[in-house]
Length: 357
Image 1 (cartoon, helix red, strand yellow):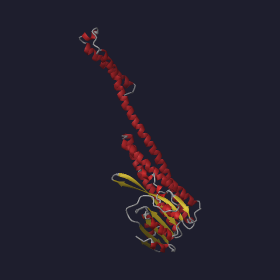
Image 2 (cartoon, rainbow, N blue to C red):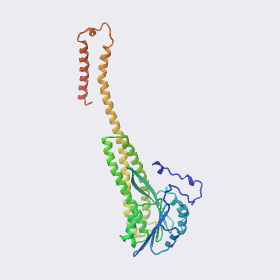
Image 3 (cartoon, helix red, strand yellow):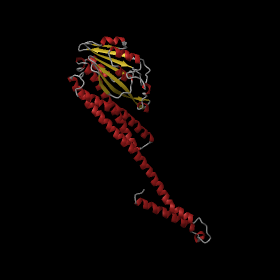
């Protein structure tokens, strides 16, 4: 779990700026390139397209979405970047998969980095995967680079195929907005699932605070750190677009981007709220454990206090001096038992009246 926080960027130490070196995990599946080329009247969708064939979509009047699954093949990334005239520093950031969300304006095209999160069940344990999505948006073309196959963009593809909404009548900026929007919406699905886990965990901490619950609190706190690192910088990215400094986003699309900004703020608020709740759960666990320990110590203290006078009496009459008259008294044994039982019962009554038991 901790490897997502400590990245190994030492492989690039001493290299010249713009040197393209892959940093991140290498997926087992090969690189796969898919293309969706569309306008208001038609859709042309292709799978397993070669990098060389992508050059034909560079200056078309339609909108083209080229999706690149797998950035570990550096030569293929360089080849695609060469066809679309991408800056070497941009290509360097694409293959370095530990970038924070950001926006860079290269004039003719934009470079946007997002963090795509996915939550799935692995043998009864929830696993949060954090993947970098690189978006290059130019005039009439959008390039997306993913670390591995599988994404949350099926709803965008369906809208293009079915001609739902304004996406087919709009430009590449609306396609880029749709990709950003679905990534942000997916944050809510993850946050709601983790919120359900927190509700169950809160009940467990109140009823039966166990060490497994504390481990789950720590696991959820790490999850929230990952989500926070994905959402907070994205707020600044969208805010830069809304300020009007980015000319490739047209005015009609900025209306939709304001809605994404609102969603991002809500995701930030939910993340911070959950982090505070988890901090409270951690304190609740410690308080519950401390209370249980206090209860145990109170019971042991009461038992020890009751036995102190009994031990004293037993110790006195265990000395066996010859001049102790009770030793030869016919009812001495029963008298000592009566005194000890009376002392114990008296102390129990006293503790009950003081609400110590």
